[in-house]
Length: 417
Image (cartoon, rainbow, N blue to C red; front, side, top):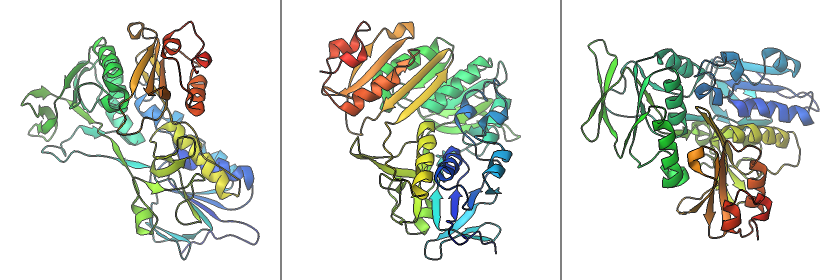
């Protein structure tokens, strides 16, 4: 039995998770508490790391694996952090304030952070277990997929979401023949709508990607050796495939929280301080369903900025700081020579009006999603340093003039009435 309990006058912190939120939580704790024991427990055999490079620079072979690590081992040593790498947490006991690990050890905590992240949604169809059918979530996944991106090979991507599009771009830059199967009529249809989704489709088609919209996947076919060689779609078409990458979403890892009796509803439910239904347990990153005071709604966000910001905020709150976690959700993506950033939130059930600023055909434009006269979200494509103005318009919630919003000659700050 291992006991990392607190000594007199100190608080014992335990962080469960091996992603960016966990690393930033250590930073947050150390801002307010320089000496108390901190333990990080992660199932993966790595230091805590960030995931955006997995489908961007690392996949493109423009960056090495070390780019993913938020801090090196020396940093954790300097911060007096006990790293339990490759030893997953199997149970939480809120009454005893302990975490049990796979090796049977227990660690005592005074304050606990759940930064358990999420897992990929998998396809339950014939052939799903064939060799060279991949999902992207871990560093090992990224390296395995990159090794398959050989010029001239046939790559089929299931799902035209952010991950699917980024992998499609990487595969084309490696010279692969790429087909994307997507049941919706455009990429990112539920996120950006048909007009901007159509721009994404045109962008990828201009780089040689083939789309099969309005079609799903029925099964995968394989060789006698057990390797995938084809994708049979719902319409009956067969697409040759040397490699398949499935990107159909993720689900929050709430198993530990549920077993511990915490309130769970599309993630671990927290307040605006990221505190769960147990006053000694916080949650951050993909797994946290937090309350936004600005947007007056609950949010669970699966992007880098949320892990970065919520991890730091949770760490500070655990260490006693007065924290209100209230960012505007933010996301970024790189595809070919396109860089884009998106900020805001469009609630489910709302069909927003889209206002464009600039000409999408130039690949330099902005898009805004409006509910009535109020901006819900905004995105730029290759028009940098505009996100602060977008977020200000969202926070202010003032009516906007659509004509001014669409006019590149008018400063964004003047679009609000």
